[in-house]
Image (tube, rainbow, N blue to C red; front, side):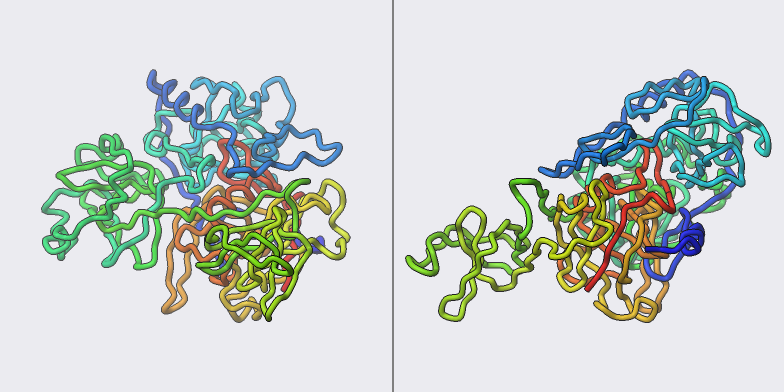
Length: 538
């Protein structure tokens, strides 16, 4: 377990610093000045509030009950425990269905608007809001000390300073531009795209035809190509108000790009983007990214997330299980010891089957028996057994996560009871030294910082990447985290730079099951001592 000194050192990992393995990129920049509330504000807040609802889990994945004596309110559909709010007459009501009135709303205008435990810049940071988030607040500031706009209590707990990173005006241009919130009900919180080649320019406005030809010298040739048809399924709406009529986009620092600015650069070849809005102009389709870049979609491949996910475990379905790691394997009826076997059906790649302890060998071939009495060959299987020896931390009601590097498997436990099993992708270099290779660290850690999404990038020569808004990120040791991977479907094989990659469905389940919880409407949370334990071993 981490020592007190190491726990203190983890504060440097809070919500925005970069590390060597799975780097998370953060911003804290000045914001646009406040505007007066408008009649349209009430509708905007209602729209934002309507999107904040308890998440549903992946299919057949029940959330474990809270530990005995745990009185925190919880969504038993998701395991997402909402932190209790601080008391007081001005405290806003907590809960995802609590009404949000425009007159009692606070909106984030920064990429990261921090929430503090007490109304002070020196206080502990307990989480943050993503730009565009609208949360309920106290009617009046609790103090103006160190914050001219006032420190407001926000739901479900904590305090935010109104000023450069937050506003009481929910019609602020950055709030309206980012009104589409990340969907925590979905395996991917946004619609995503990966750069095609050559990669797209990042426009700072909706470009005219002449401007496009000036920036994209191959546009005539490129326009003859067929765009990814997957983009046909997204909803195309009017050009966002912030960039209509030739206006430049407003950056997250609250400043519009120069009127003569046309584009800020180009994406690198291995890059991914999340999108807030889609629109058409001049017969061409564009997306407005979460980072407020205008990107032509015909230079992007739409991300279709992996459909793979693990298996929920309970009293009827538990370990051992096997994952089929080959294509063309079959399930058989009969008995290899007596009657012989007949094929029942072909098994899917990475299909998971609960099995018994019975294993037999006939004519040099091993067979495993399923709990339904059928059989499969023990070839190219990953078998996950019940734990043989109870670790000291496996106490009743304590959640913890077991990751095996050699099996590329993860099991989530409540005490001694396994509740979920799946395949993962750990570091590409296996059991190597994480300081020298792309390997996952081994030992016991605590999940300490969680992001609904976070940008990860790397500048190693020959292996540069820029992956925006990676979903369901959970840091447990320096730059190492659990997170969804939307750029590959190799779960069950080593693949990562050291993080533990999960399928989007599995990452979403784990995110809502572990501590610290991320309250509805927030984008991130942290706790140095209350996080779920992680045990990583060969």
